[in-house]
Amino acid sequence: MSKRPRTLDAFFAPPPAKKQHIDPSPSEDGKPTTNPPLALLEAEQQPQSTHPTYPFPIPHLPHSLTSPLPSTPTTSPIVMNTHPDLDILYYKPYLPLTTAKTLFHHLRRSLPFYRVKYSIKRGALDTSVTTPRFTTVFGLDSSASFCPQSGRLLDARTPGKPLAPASLLAHTERTTGANFNFALVNYYADGNDSIAFHSDSEFFLGPNPTIASITLGSSRDFLLKHKPTPSHHPSETKAMKLPLASGDLLLMQGRTQSHWLHSIPKRKGGVGADGAGRINITFRRALSRAGTENYYRYNVGDGGGGGGGGEEAYKWDDARRAMVPWKRSGGREVEALRDGVEHRESFPTPVERLE
Ligand SMILES: O=C(O)CCC(=O)C(=O)O
Image (cartoon, rainbow, N blue to C red; front, side, top):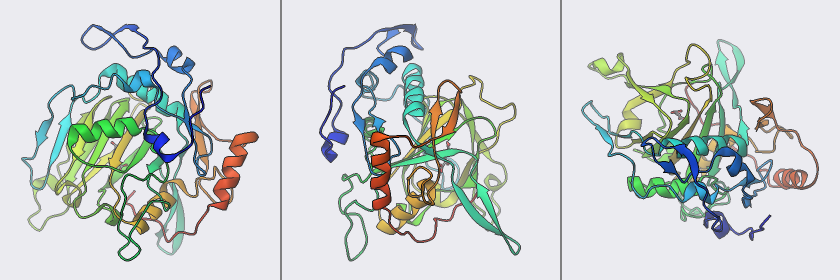
């Protein structure tokens, strides 16, 4: 396997050029594509990213997958701005179907995921809740460069945790003109996984954050409704439904996060139409240290893979076709964990989220 130096630059540099494979299966337009079938993708030897808080090394996106990323989106976006405070560009699709499918399988196989636990007060009782989906976070952490006086981010391009889908992030920046520095990746294993109405108007993203949200795998409904208004606008009660499909991109911008709520409701009948589960990637831009640390703590814990109070890490098991708890074994993985424990810091209370 080719070894690359473990510098931060290396995380953003494209992997060395590989021979292109032609996939005989047709794309949406009936022509052969340059995306490799999964067996070939697996056979590719990919350089890997390591970080003290990764429970295992993470392979880069294969060159055969990133090189065909089109320089412009497949379609012009649908502009959604006729409702009050709504400002969304809906690229349907953003990625070709075959690229989205290969990316889905690669990310599900490569990334450590976590099942977030938090506690809420129900009457006098503290109740523990497990978020019904898998999540993981890449990008900035406390090792990034912040202004000591204001706490604001100085160097947005210095990754704390290297971004696994970095080339996709760069492509999304080129398409949308927005800047992002971290990614939340969600995996919905089946129709029972969901996220309740909430907005991504967290303090550390600034007042009107721009968020790019990409769907890979099964289609799921995405609901949008206005936050309560003094005039009880009908968009508060009648939710808008977008049937997000594999390869779609939603760019939520302007006043969308501060004035609207969104959700992925549970879906009857278990898995989606193609039986595959769904990955959602949201690219965001963090602006301040405290919020960034909170966000990591909330979504990943200490990233230690179940050791000493962090969230338990899960990894996709191809044979069992399910996420299984990641178990520590020997060698490099143990080293990474040991390093992770040494780097553990104390964090303030978790970011509040509506579940
Ligand atoms: O899965 C999605 O499309 C939405 C995800 C979301 O709203 C979030 O993670 O904040």
